[in-house]
Length: 169
Length: 115
Image (cartoon, rainbow over all chains, first blue to last red; front, side, top):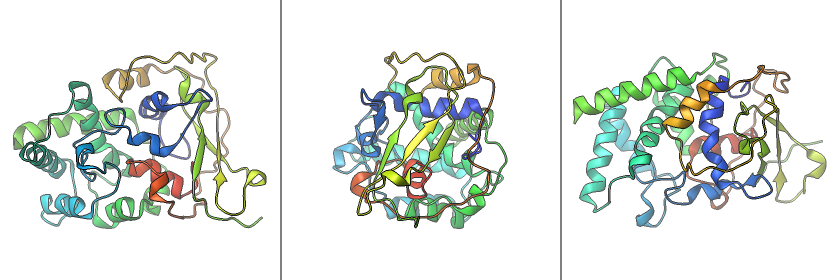
């Protein structure tokens, strides 16, 4: 929690789903997370769907679409709502099926999780987003920000996202 | 000992199987076990704050609302030990995508030696 600047509630709740990919010896591999509809699911904002053959590789064009949703400005919970709805429309147009009901809220939370973790005032600049997705590197501005990220904060973002999704829909 | 970038991360996460453990990841880099060519095994020690070690897997498959609620109900005495001093002594080495998953956050933690 200290390393990740998270409170107990946040750290325990977001790590809990990993139990399902644990082996009997209590370990797991990162690639086990690719298993479809276990932790990985369709509707990721930066990954293709499982039916498209590769559900784990970062897709630069999809990140660009997120930037476009924000009109080139910082990504906020409001622009993420726009991205969420766009992604849903794209999935439908592509013949994809809706998420299982039990993954719906997962997707909501995941959509705002980086916003909560970054803790950059509700705005994600390109300088923060690009290294995270393109290089899979957490920028120093996040690592050196020792403010505690909370589960409450994550849920506030989640419900705010749901509000904007309904508004934008 | 000179640090060599990890190509693959092997994570020991016993505490994840515990129902009430507030997870505190402590990346303890065991360099003695390090195979100098490819594989860097990083043991992720965890601090068991709760005495409950219920390893019974339940049927939950995802990070759902119940998980989040349980997070609030997590009991513990707080952090008892911290190996991290809060300063970022991080490095970065991008691992092979073939060994990684779809989650950029966990991949990033692995790339930067937190896992």
